[in-house]
Image 1 (spheres, rainbow, N blue to C red):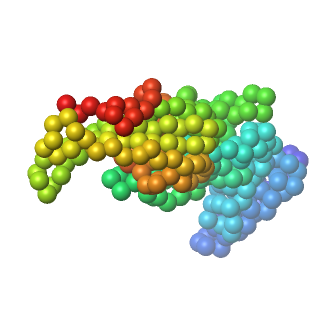
Image 2: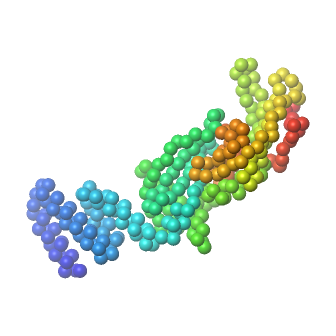
Image 3: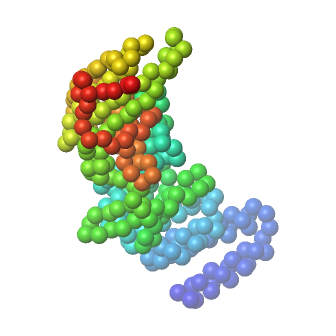
Length: 281
């Protein structure tokens, strides 16, 4: 092997005596051929180093990605297999933005949803390359790097430091009663009124009721509900069959899964007030 390498280096020195494009083409071709030889001998890391010298020659850039994935597969095959089995949710930079992370072989995909006064909207999906070491997933995202710590134990993988949740974990964290109380501005009469929504998430079923303060009628309000339906949690977020189903969602805020009502985070509560249980005094 040392004699072969010395021979190739000697030839490279000879090639240096050429000028212009011909010299560059010959050197690139030799580096490419040597990288392929290293691959045949199983020296993946050194092969990558030679392809990196000629990133614009033939399919070198694609070969680098393929080889790096083979290296990852060899060293972290069990991690890659576990990553491909689940979906993770994490905060997208604001209370009203949710990111969804999935893995498919050598790539990671990040989808984004945002909530506003009209409900949930999709912002699209982007796919990136990623690399693994013993404790961190590094995803190259548009010139920046997203570093995610991970742990693999007994075939189960967890991401982040309590700020990434898979589907089962979101399901578990959403169980129970939630409340959204807020003021609505009524432009037609130039005034605000209060409304309150109470929601129960329970093992695949969603039930909710609400009340709104009556205009110019102290102590009176309008009661609505209860409405109910089934819900599911998937890569597309929170979907349900209850009336006005577009208004519910969830996000990860300050490390906790929180039910969303339009673009407003809900808070935990302990039950339904019922038709006569609201107070807007």
